Image 1 (cartoon, rainbow, N blue to C red):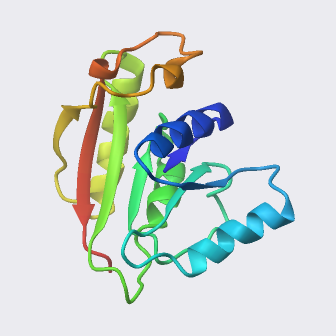
Image 2: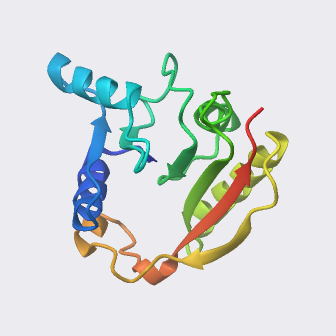
Length: 170
């Protein structure tokens, strides 16, 4: 899962914990021990349950290499094609254990600037060979209300929409 704010990482991890998922965090300022623990988990993920990694976009930028990555949740707005290609390109790397890849792109369709940014991302996804995404669907209403703290718009979970798309790896 990819986001831009460390406070958002904390909120996402709290919500994941309520569903029984332990998330590994990758963000700036991690100590060597914490970073080694995450890298060890990524090197040998649980084959039945996989691994959940929540990271900042800046951490997942240049130099990040994890070819096993098969699912990406983009949980922050971005429009710049180069960054979108960089983040989504992490999914496109070949690996023996990958058969399909999934991209989940979240948006708030009720804020025009965010909707326009999403439209730009869809164009980029198409150039990367992704199929037409499934129609957006509402996020379940059990989203942690604390995760919206600090939002300038105070959007409700019903206003947040998810757009899914998938493609086979090269």
